[in-house]
Length: 241
Image (cartoon, rainbow, N blue to C red; front, top):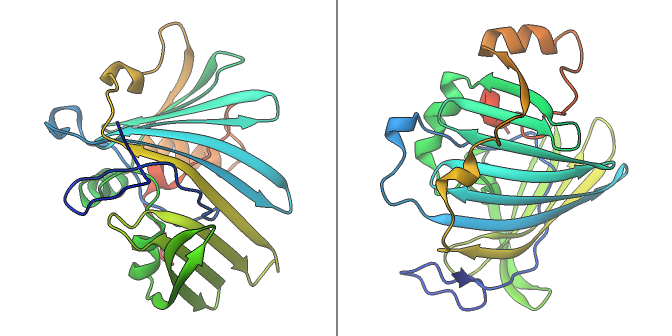
């Protein structure tokens, strides 16, 4: 396994890095059709802590190529999200039930455009027109600071100077609500062994199944099911900055 203390440009050598990125309604989704999954996928892991007005939320992320699994504690319930191929599963592990949703064509097409299905804050900022504003040191880590300011608010992303430029901190200010949020990354790692079966829901769970258009129509009426949708961009595709 490679961790993010010594990073070498040619190979991803990752040791523990403290990071903070932001609760984002931008994002970039994962998942290829089953027969299109890359033959030599890279494994990745990180954990995040979101802090804001509503409190804290901790999430663990794993990926293998374009397949993703995350686990987030919401109240007392572990919420598991799995994205693989054209399917998005989310379930409440305490209740053993959740949703199976067919992903949008846009979300599926975006899978091939990224290295991993999480931690792509810098790429999103650049797409929106963000620019590098300075270099410095954050929590003992040499970083670049990037910023995007527009009518919606302000987003600042700190990334490691070394390649690959994984995020260390993201702060977001929403102009309409006047609220700010911060997301912290930690324990970046890559290149470790992880079975493909880890990216499949366990047998015995109960899923309510939706085609994409069916889910969109149902969600307009209110929350769907007992497990919240925590990574909606993985279903719908990314939204503009």
